[in-house]
Length: 486
Image 1 (cartoon, rainbow, N blue to C red):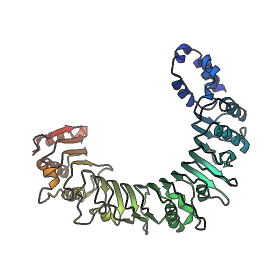
Image 2 (cartoon, one colour):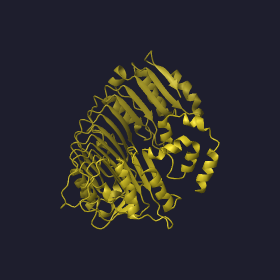
Image 3 (cartoon, one colour):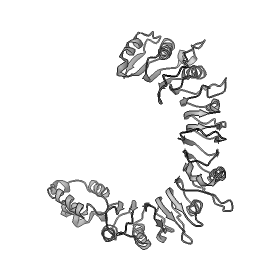
Image 4 (cartoon, rainbow, N blue to C red):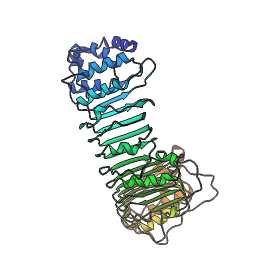
């Protein structure tokens, strides 16, 4: 309350008339961002007109944060802001309850608040309990307006008998511990219409004896520590969960150092978008990696630091891919299955070309190649030869170059000018251009052979000003080509 009084004194000098001239929608938006009870005194002093209307009853987005409030203050705000017969639909309620010694909330307190919100056609609910136990408010069962539920840093011991969330579309589980006989699978069974699911730092295991299907789930986000404590069973749990999603279209997997999943076997015929982000800092020599079979896939984002096994099945529908690989034994197989690719961003730290010899990418029009590896010039030559319709090329060192590397790979000109240079390439963009010997060789070759080039953009650091003059002197076969320096 002391802070609220200070804020009130500051706001006593505000021009009430000017504030009242603001549109009602804007004033309500301002109120919706204010914490639970801290600014109530201030807002009442700002405008008698609005204090008479009790704007809190009209706010559609409410956060109840007891960071420095007592139970009495908390419940007072609930009565004053939510308990209203004429309140509009409540879009979102966020309960953030620290539960200190002087502020202890019972299950009935939380149930009371949620019940009021449900009576106002609650759409989105987030509960953050700082590790405390949540007993699900019974009023949520069969609530037909609740579409989104976010549970953070809490425990669940039991679900009420017959509990169901029939209209829930989106579920987020962040650091949720399910105790006793309950599990994430138990929770998913009571969400028959779920379309979007996020599981992060929440243990998942699957009982083969329990039969349920996530028949509406279209988007799934997983962190690998979801399956941490189950050892080799984790591989089966991943596959089993994906099998329960017959219409899944989007899958995101974040894989970290703490990981018991040896092989991510992703076999999803309906999948259209797949993102894998592996951030492990060290390489473990074992049979670990990914097997991906997604024949309907259209977009692929694959960032892997250390994997010893990767297999991409034939994916003829992929038109856009972002692939970044540091250490992998099967790196030569990465893009060989992407025969219909239109746009490709590629970073390969290995010395191997990431596709079998003889592959062509007839539909590739946009290529972004990372120049951080020592063999990037050879890879560029291969891609220019294998992508006859390439229209734009971007070169960029995303991860820095090791200038102490004793092995130098110089540009080896193709014996025949690639078709993309002689007929199609229009845009060249080069970020972090350093003007090394191989940089100059590549730039000179492209400018001398790209007959349709319209623009060449080079990003040059201030300490390499002389490189700009070198580029300007290079021969350009395209009479319409403009050089731009940034």
